[in-house]
Length: 440
Image (tube, rainbow, N blue to C red; front, side):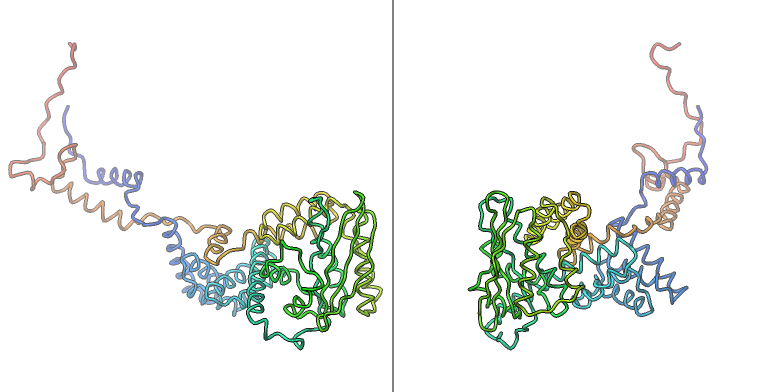
């Protein structure tokens, strides 16, 4: 057997292949971070070639958000927006950048445009974030009102504003405990259809109850109603109670309190079969409007008389969804609302509510957490290419070693110069290997 000196080009090719196979050129501290850095450089080159490309500006803003640089992200996203880019991706990420810079009100105004966004993914993200921020702001508003409660006077109360609190359950069967939230919700929705009235949003009302720790303790009665009215600037506060009687009957007692003088106005008690729960609710609504002195149009009457579902089990599932929402468990709420929609496919409000709750469950939380969640909806940038310059430099250094007498082997890794003056490359033929034991 003879030793043949391998040419340097062949050695280099073999080393290059081994280096690429084993990843010896990977020196990035974080591959995904490197991918985004490479994408950033590519987009910057693209923008230099086409300075008016709003799509490139937008994409640069998204990459800067991923690299935790909201200031640069805002500059590119705002520039794209000011040049007419109003697609869902631009609006959404510009909202996120504003949030990260402490401009929550501006972010809410951007997210509020979600109904006009055609891309479903961004529409859902914007809707979820909008609802989540509105809830946060409602809690903040109520905390501020409670802190400054002494300064709130009757002049702040608006007579046309009505607040409807959840009805208190007087029975012992836990299956029907959530019903009071749903009944109050339907009363609110019916009153909202009347043009002469303004109804306190449920999210603000629930925020006040949460701040006052009323959510689990009897809700609101005639003695606490005037205070609630002042805090909510509502001229009238509706509350009440209900019970399941004889196993399959429903009794509902309601009243409203005038905030200005604390006058209590009891309504006629209403009873009917439990399956006719919406008929009972409609009677209460018409009683309230009659006491308020509101003259209804035919269109308003028709809207109020509309019944969203006649399926008691579907409505109870919807009510459980409202309770889960109030407790901050939006995933559970979405499941309950979906159950309601499955039990009655015509119950459109349940299906819509399921989607909203699911969107909130994704979009809630601190901005930093939300950015990480939102990035999962973005297509990842192309993987960063191997650093060919570094690879060439390493191969070049290896080539110098080969040319200067580098001898590959298990124990020899030093150039000839370091092995002594007598060290030479083995150019003579090597002896044949010994025969194996027992060989001829």
